[in-house]
Structures are given as structure tokens and as C-alpha cells.
Image (cartoon, rainbow, N blue to C red; front, side):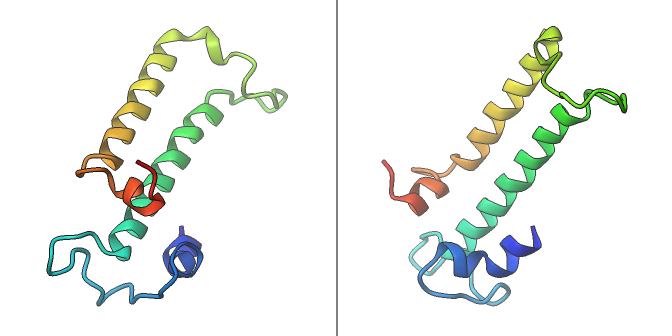
Length: 106
């Protein structure tokens, strides 16, 4: 997350911006690159936590394969898919979606 915060502007965007003083929304109401970077960081954080849920299901030291019993609990699958759907709605809640604006895909 620290790498995304401090070097995300250099990785994803053509022009650098200030992490504190750059406004999130410009005067015309459009999202700035800072808003897009904040969305990317939020999405990465939530996805890391969701995949950690899969990793935390197996706690025995001898079991290395975390996917061995993944489909045994259907409630876990339903909750995981519901969380992924809600996360997708959060990221794409704006008109056209912030990440859609970033990638240019329509």
C-alpha cells in the first residue's frame, strides 16, 4: 500500500501530482488523478483482505494447499461472491466508474 501511495502516481499516470494538495475533484466536477489513485488503493486493500479470507481458512501447519477444501462450504462461497459484488459496486458507483475513466474502457 505504501508503494501504491507514494509511487502510484508515477506508475499509473503521465503527470505527477501532489498527494496532499491536489484536489480530489477539479473545478468542473471531474475526478482528478488523485481520486483515481485513491480508488486503486482502496480496491487493492479490499482485494488483499478478501484473498486473506481464503488463506485463513486452513490453520493446520501441515496443510499447505489452501484450495483443497474451498468448495466444501457453500456459505463461504456465497458470502465471498456477495462481498466481491459489493466491492465492484463501490468502485463503479460513479457515473461510468472511476476505474473505467482511468482505463478508458467503455
